[in-house]
Image 1 (cartoon, helix red, strand yellow):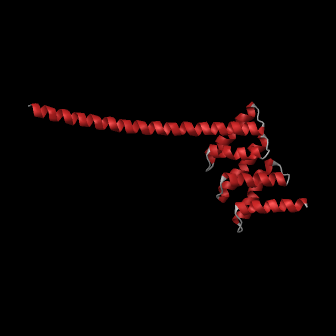
Image 2 (cartoon, helix red, strand yellow):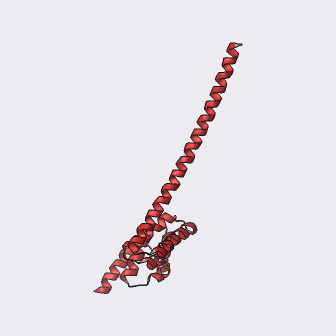
Image 3 (cartoon, helix red, strand yellow):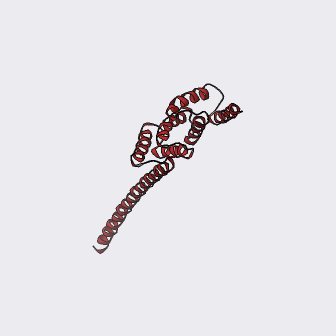
Length: 173
């Protein structure tokens, strides 16, 4: 009788420990996932704040920057954080808030259509817009022209950017 009772007790204890271990593993996984979501959210918020400061945004303009980044993050292959980082590139190039929200749409389109990195697209777009004195509102048209050039030639986004730089230098001479 005593050994039967002890065997059942050990089996119950093992079963309880297995259940506890499974619960802990599941809880740890959920906690890790929640931490990752919080970290991404914090990174996005910091990126938007940086864009706003660099672009000279006011309260409503901060909201417009955030809304644009979130909308493009939901409707394209890029995340809102990647879009916000692209916006930073424009702001660092001297684009104001409205120009940044206009230009990022073209850059996202260019990057997606040519399978380029966001920074490559924002660099090419900001250089072309600034060098040729274009309106940032025309960024989608610029992106369309760049995409056509890249997809119908041996150019890639890096070589196109270099050629644009050379053309701009020749134009000034």
